[in-house]
Image 1: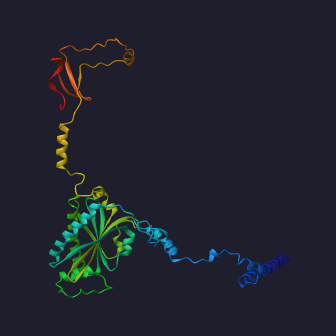
Image 2 (image 1 turned 45 degrees about the horizontal axis):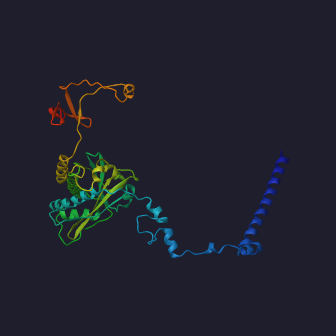
Length: 369
């Protein structure tokens, strides 16, 4: 057993020596290649293509990054810019949503003036679409996030109040003097008084939002909770699309921003209404067109058929008819005649003669029964 172990140990040393020799040979080969001592490597160096060392010019770099303005007049992106923009949401245009937000701005201008007893100007900066997770990550903190529920649509929305607007509202409602900037103490949580005052403002905004949607679809937006951490205000999956309306509220030398987020899932029940070009598009009436159509209908020519009798026969008998065959009707000179317009029976009368023409006197009306 001892002899076996010794032989095994000797074999291991031999392998390590050979391995060390291979490593030394490989190191020497790399050193020769890097130092230029190898004639083969030196001969192969000039044979390399010159294009491998070519430097890209500015136009090629812009094209690679997707910043080429010559070909970027449209919405299509290319290069790395297309990869970065692939996370954005390609949303459909909702014309009526812009009308709703315009109504909201006008109504908020009045309600906020009554709420603050100050000269308030509300403006709509822009309406954009993005993913919910990207929006949460872009919220500048500290801020207050009001979660509200659309009762009739059975889904939620988000109202974000930035720090400037919070301190401005508190300053205005508690009697702060004009001409002095609101005091901001960063790095501390919002007090109960600040939360209660902002909550009162959120109720005013939600009431105006319900009134703005009312001509389109009656809906009630109910305040649910107020959060300061965006993680606790998650109302949708991060990858879901949402509409964000950014509002600016100015109170002379004070003010801030208010952002309204509505996920597409929340707007789904009224999506067809939001696709309209104007209010009541699908239910509107054009009196001029109705009058013109009615006048033209009275001048429409229709064909009337006088049916003396009808019988049900086999196709074999009909195909056996020849010139001179007789077809017997179960009608007499006193039988009633149906007058039809297409397949619709209109009148019933009796057949007679007037001058050289066969005439039918209408005795009964059949349509409208």
